Amino acid sequence: YIKVSPGLLTTLVEQWRPETHTFHMSFGECTITLQDVGMLVGLPVDDEPLLTRASGNILGLAYDLLGVVPPQSEIKGHRVRLSWLETNFNDIANDIIDLDRLLRYARAYILHFLGGLLVPDRSSCFVSLRWLAFLRDFQTTKTYAWGVAVLGCLYHNLCTCTDYKMPSCGGFTLLLQLWTWKQFPTIVSSPLPPIPPGSPIALREFKCLHFYFRWSNIATKISMSDDIKFYRKFFDYMTRKFVRSCIWGLVVPSLSLCICECHQPDRVMRKFGYQQPIPHPLMTPGNVHALTLRGKPKDDWATILSPALEHWGNRYAYHFAPTPPQVGLLGPNLEYMRWYRRK
Image (cartoon, rainbow, N blue to C red; front, side):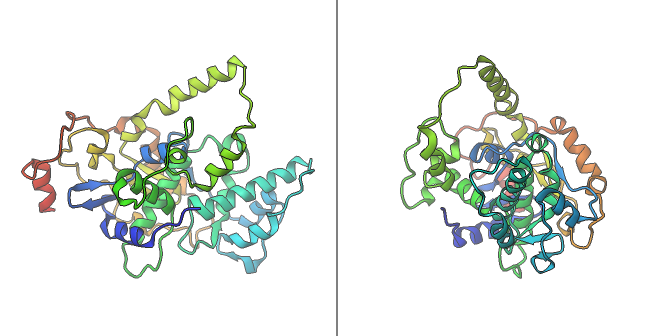
C-alpha cells in the first residue's frame, strides 16, 4: 500500500496548466505522457479508444453483466457505490464451476479496480456503470487503450482541480506520484529499493506496491512454458506494441468515456532527448473541460467527439517533428527559455 502525499499532489496541481496539460516549472514544461503510463504500469496505449456509446438502460446493462441490479439507494446517476460492489462480490467460493457466475465476479472486481484505483472520481466512493460496456467480452476488453483512458481521466481531474473550489482530486493520482518519484528521485526521503530482475518498471522501482507482493509470493510456483509458439507470439507482440515507441511522441486526444484531453508531448521534448523548440499553438478545445455524462444517458459520445475519434484513428500522422539531441542543460538565453519566461 502506498499513500499518496496530499502535499505533493497539491503542489503539482498548482503547477498544472489546463490549456497545455503540462506542469509549468521554473526550468520549463514537463508532464506525464503515454510513455510513462506504458512503462510504469504496463497499460496498453495503442489500441481502440474507450468512448461511451448511447446506453439508456444502465440498470439493464448491470443486470446483464453482473446478474443483479443495484438498489436505488446505492446509485447516483450512472454511478454505483464501490461499497456495494465489495458487499455483493467480495466472497466467492473456490469450488464455483459456473462460468457465467465467475465472469460476473470478474467484471465486478475489474469495475471496483477501475473506480478504486485507475479512474476514481473525486469522492473515491463511486464508479460509473458505463465501464461495464467494455467488460462484456474479455477477448474484446484487452483490445482497448486503457492507458489512454487512464491518462485522459488524470488530465481531466488535474484540469478541474485547478479551480480552488474543488476539495479533492480524482484520477490515478498514485501513477502521478510514481511518475514524480521516477522523474525527480531526490524528492524521495529514502533510497529506492533494489530492482528485482524480470519485473515491470513500476514493480522494479517501487517494491512496496501491493500487487508486487502478490506477484512475488507466487513467482516461485510458476513453471516456464516450453511451447515455441508461445515465445514467437510473445516477441511478435513486443515488437508491435512495446518496441514501437513512436506512440509516445504522438500529439493526440486521450479519450475516456466522455473525456477528451490532449496529449501534447511536443511541449516536453527534452523528456525524449530532443531539443525543445517553441511549441505549436494549443490544440485543446475551449469547452473540453465542461464535458460531462451527467443527465446524458442516451448521448453517443463517439458521434459527439467524432473529430477527436478521427484524429486518434490517424494518430501516427501526428508525431512531433524530431529536433537535434539535447546536450547538457538549457541555457537561460536560449530561444525557448526566453519565450517561456515571457509566457
